[in-house]
Image 1: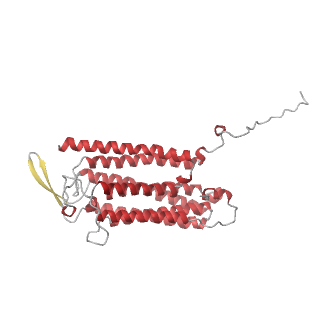
Image 2 (image 1 turned 90 degrees about the vertical axis):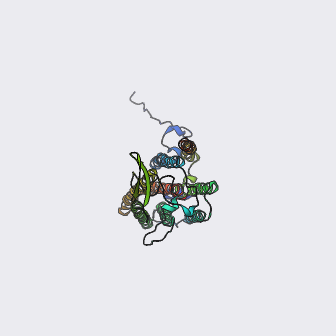
Length: 110
Length: 258
């Protein structure tokens, strides 16, 4: 991707051509993934497998939104890790509190 | 002393060290970096809300029968597709269709936003204005849809739910039509509370996003950024707008699909 530096190299008065190929490609990926999520929601029985597929597809969509739309994929490595690393700790909190919720459930109903 | 010329020489290091100053850390401008850090902190806020949802959902029983035989009760957590099944101007059941439409609108407005950013790199003012306007329109359509969704949710399902409650030593039957923070016809009170808080907090973000987009659009059209010779402000508001879309992707999965 060279678009990031384009405003620096652009000569005034000269109109550059739009570079929108990657943008529309990302749009189609996001739309198709959402459509597939719908199909799964109506055809697949409830269960762990279904939830896992949903979570996986959500993270794929997140990757494309953050990577392409927010341009993080094309930033320097240190910036990528500055953002991703703290966010990864959230996963630990999810697992910890879901487990805690399940323990609460057992304490109340068993 | 008088004929001695003192030459003040500024010593230039051979290669500029990262600690010498005058350089942008992480090769991102101050404004963009701060926007990233703000969005990271906002990620934690939304994570906290969604994790709370997961925690409270896991401490409630699930409906164990077949999905087709599901009825609303305070005893267990409702199945989302049974709650969100209405669309405007149609009285039948269309599960998740409306929220799917909202998701599509937000993704589309994210695309028009990134097209505005791309136009900003080319400094094509007319193009930026066009795509900013589409983005604002998308945001307004989403907010309108959410207002309808909320009003429908508060109004309640076609048939009111009857709950049996143990009050002052005897069983009392209560008919619940409308949803509020204390009780709702769909399930445990926490279900509606979390619906209002999570979609409300996200909707507030969309609302402020639309406002900021309008301000930036105004600045673009009066030529503020043309004067600066760069459209980085469009990029910054773009980061915020994509983040709002990103959050909705997670809300859509964890609140409506799972």
